[in-house]
Image (tube, rainbow, N blue to C red; front, side, top):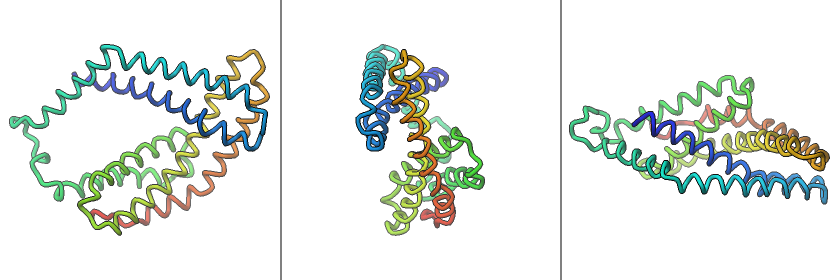
Length: 227
C-alpha cells in the first residue's frame, strides 16, 4: 500500500506540476515578456494557451479516473493508522511543544546545510532547495499560534525573501523549457517570438539570482523562533 500511494501521489504530483507550469507561462511569463516585445508574442501566446488547455484536459481526465479515487482512499487509510492505539510511536504521544523544536530543527537544518554552497547549486539543486523552503514555510503556518508573533514573523520574512528569488529563478528555467518545446514542435512560425522569450527569461533568471547570496545570508542569520 505504501508503494502504491507513494508512486501514485508522485505521478499525480508531476501532472499537477506540469499544469501549473503552463499556467505560469501563459498567465505570468509571456505577459511579462510582452512588455519588452510589444505585439511580437501573439503567435507563441496562442500556442502556449493551446498547450495549457490540453494539459488541463489531461489532468481533468486523470482526476476522474478510478485510480485517483483509490489513491485518496489508500491515503485516508494510512492516515487513520496514526490513531491506532497499538502503534508504538512515542513521538505521537508527546505534546507538540516538546517535539516541535526537534522537528523544526530537522527541516531548517537541511536547508541551512544546502545554503552553505548555494551559489554553486545547479538549477535542479535550487529547485530542490525551494521545495524544502516551501515545506518549512508550511510548517511555520501550522505552528504560528504557538509562538510569539514578532519572532515568528521576522523568521518567516527571511523565508519569503529567499522563496521569492528561487521561485522567479525556477519559473525562468521552466519558461525556457516549455518555450523550447513549443518552438521545436512548430513549423517555424514560433522561432522569432521563441528567441525573444528565451532571451528575456535568461535575463530574468540572472536578475533574480543577483539577490540570492544576500537573501541566503539573511536566512542563515535568522534566529529560530521555536527555540
